[in-house]
Image (tube, rainbow, N blue to C red):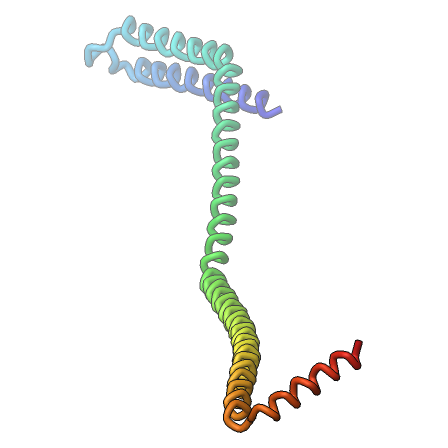
Length: 200
């Protein structure tokens, strides 16, 4: 429909051009001044033929090239539209990414604070764990020290008891040697033998 309308317009424009050229030619020669100024009728007919040839050539070119040029322009227009659509899509994606990065940048300070707080909490937990382990180790060392002291006390008591017993025996021996005479000695031996015989 648009092609027919364009064809009609072109045909009308072409016809009007031819009519105008012929009208000008007629006016010039009707006034009779054309030949006085050096314009012969041959020149005017030449101009008319050239104008008609140009108009016919333009009409033929328009008719022949109309479809390919129209297709070329349509495809070029579609390509340009496609490029604009692609650019709009890329612009939309870029704006979306920009908004995401802007949002991330606005929340990055909070994330940094959160990470720092987590590290502080982990450090506190590690400190508490180390202190608890140190306290347990100190308790264990204390228990081991008490146990070692108790063992040393027991050994010392046993050693002291043995030493006291040995000293007591020696003192008793010395006392007996000093105070025991021959008859007391004989009496003790007899009592001892009597006990041994009596037990068996």
